Amino acid sequence: MRLVSQVIISSNIDDTVIQLEGLQKNERFVKIIKEDNFLVEDAKLAIEKAHMASDETTVIILAAKTFSPVVQNKLLKVIEEPPPKKEFILITPNKATILDTIRSRLPITIRDSSGEEEALELDVSQLSLATVYEFVQTHKRTDAKTMKSLVERISKEAIYSQVYNLDEKTLNLFSNAFIALDVGSPPPFVLNTLLLKLLARKKR
Image 1 (cartoon, rainbow, N blue to C red):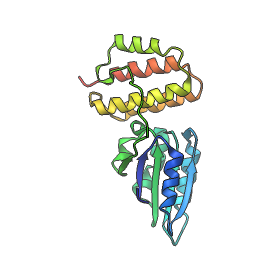
Image 2: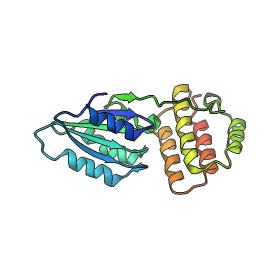
Image 3: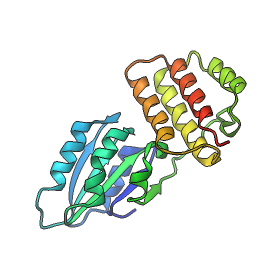
Image 4: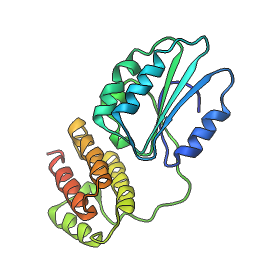
């Protein structure tokens, strides 16, 4: 890793921040780290920090499980045209929620998480109404925290499969699923809605 503008995909945000701090020499660090969602207010603070004059390079680290499309669009201009001596590093566990407009301006670094995950038990590339129903039934008692992990893995599988139209509308499906879980929507309902809408975004 280097202290340059980028998006880091990491399942362990705290560990990644510690590793970045280990690279610090003369740079000034500004860290805005959220446990769940990065809010519009956080984006405004980041922009404000970016426009503060500084003789040394300032590395602005923004970390959260989810950056909504609204937040990313708020950050877009300052990322596209950063003030002098400013580097932006976004850290999030889910590449699928990063908009194409951000991806086109920042390189993406993927840090592998340690340990192997259990099989997903769903072939995301071969979604059908029948497999969606069966999978949702399997997870009708899954709690919100576990469902977030499941949504993240489904998003990764959807990207790797290359059988879906991965435009902003599709990426919003995953962001919206995280937000719905955060506000208390029933996890099986969120999963069912996500998979049915994803199925509709399949390439014809």
